[in-house]
Length: 328
Image 1 (tube, rainbow, N blue to C red):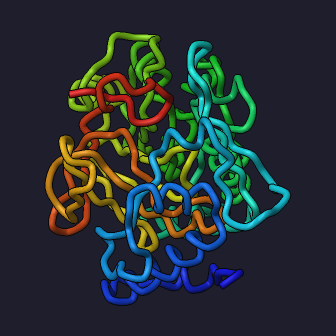
Image 2 (cartoon, rainbow, N blue to C red):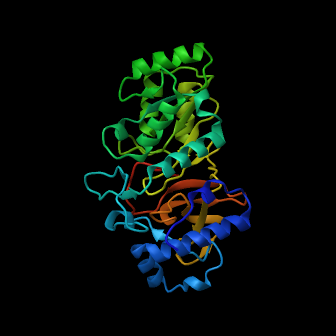
C-alpha cells in the first residue's frame, strides 16, 4: 500500500465497524511507509498482522515530534507547523504533505458543530500565537476568517479597546460571532472590558503560558462568564501534532468529528488501552495520514461511553505548551 484515500476519511459516519476498518488500513499504511512509527511498533513487540482492534494499534509518543521527522512516505511538505513551547523547551514540528487535507478537516469539523462558517463573524484573540510563525491554530482561524467573509472579522493582538467596540457593534446587529482566544488573552480582555454578549460564542483554546496563575477549567470559565456575560464558554481541543480538532460547547466535554477518536491508556501500565475511563489520552486522527494517526498524548482526562472526553491537565514533568494547559 503506497497511498491512502482522504475521501474515505471525511465521508466516515459513526459506524464503529467502518471506523475500525479505516483505522486498521491507516495503521498498515503507516507501518509500511513511516520508518519512525514502524521502529516504534517493532520496539513494542506487536505483531502487525495480529492487530484487529483499536486498542491494539500502537500509539506513537507525542514527544517524537520533537526529536524525529515523523512522516509517512517521502515528500516535500506544503507547510510545517511548530508548537509554541518556551525558550527552555524543544518545539514539536509537524510536516504537512497536503495542506488541503488540513483545510478540509477543520472546515468540515467546524461546520458540523456550528453550521455554515459564512453565517459567522470570526474574531481571533491569539496574541502569543500571532507573535510567532508556523502556528496551526493561527492558520485555521485565518482560513475561517477568510471563509466567513465578514468585514469585521480578523485578529487582535493587544487592541482590546478596538475589539470591544467591534463586539458591541456586532451585538447591536445581532450578528452571530465567535470570539476564539488563548485563555490568558480572553481573561485579560474580560477583566479590562467587561460586557454582556448575547450573540457571541466565547471559545477558549487553552493556554496560560506562564502569564497568570494556573486555574482550573471551571475557574477560567466562571471568570469569562462573569466578565463577558455569557452563559457558556466553548472550548477547542487541538495541537500541533494533529490535523483535527474536538469542540466543547460549554460543559467541558469535547466531541470529536467522525474521523477522530480518543482512547485512554493506564497511567501505570502504558500497554493497557481502554475505550473509556480515566487515564492518559490517546488520539486517533485519520487526517494525519502522512504523519502519524495514532498519538499518545501527555494529557490526563476521562473518556465517556458516548466517545466524548474531558481534559483534566497534563502529566507531571511533561512540557508546558500552548494548548490544553488547564489544570485541576
